[in-house]
Image (cartoon, rainbow, N blue to C red):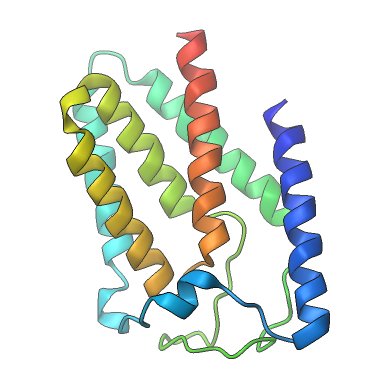
Length: 175
């Protein structure tokens, strides 16, 4: 059921983006417009945040970590499927402000880094519900870095969070 909902959502987002591209040959992204472009020296931050949250969630669920692992596996399988279902706009189809070795944002729907971050945050909150404020803050910082480094568009981060939440909620029902 999640795959069907995800496919419908991606279809409508894809149609919206392609329609905008045909009009202006530019993808308008609210996060790219609001956030400054971060220098490439910060490009390891999303990996670092993901890795630290993964280690903490593994530690908190060390007695029974299979729900965490299965949730992450399902999220990455869904990501692989959505990448294949999404037709990417041509490179240089918008005003690219990325300062990395690659010229433009290459990876679109959905952000695997942010989906993994949200899954780990949800599992940490399942073990330690009092950590809501720090975990939400870490999630917002992660979103800021992913969008600010121009690794993804804002919608990729948003859909990554939705997918992670839906998969997590399904996993919690089975355990």
